[in-house]
Image 1: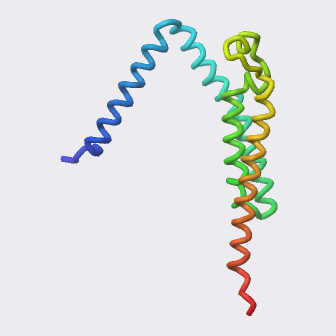
Image 2: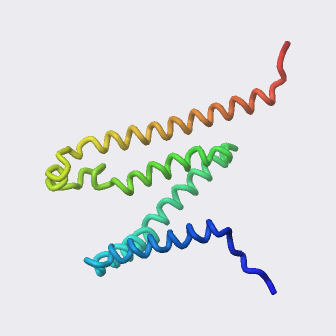
Image 3: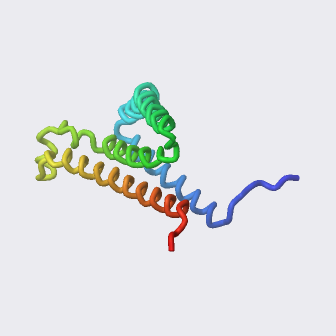
Length: 151
């Protein structure tokens, strides 16, 4: 008989706890407006699969093709990582970044939503700048290894 691939008791306990927490969150979330929540989940899945996935797939292919043409295929991740992180921030905070919030936000928080676009742009610039800095360090190390030291 084959033995089932079961993890350690701690892993099983953590898995059971995560399922219990997810079930609790699901029950609490669906208690008030289950139809609205289900509609939102289906709408988000359709929006992702029919609109966002083709868009970022085409953009990624363009970046890969552009860098392959220049012989720089290894640089793709230095563009992908900051793009994905910036895109996730935009996806989560887009109502504030695009200033689509109404007066209720100002009344609830006491703050203006006008600063979110500038902050998102600054975070995006830092992400791409850090990625570019890492790429420069990597390229410098690679060129130092290739060139023999002159004494």
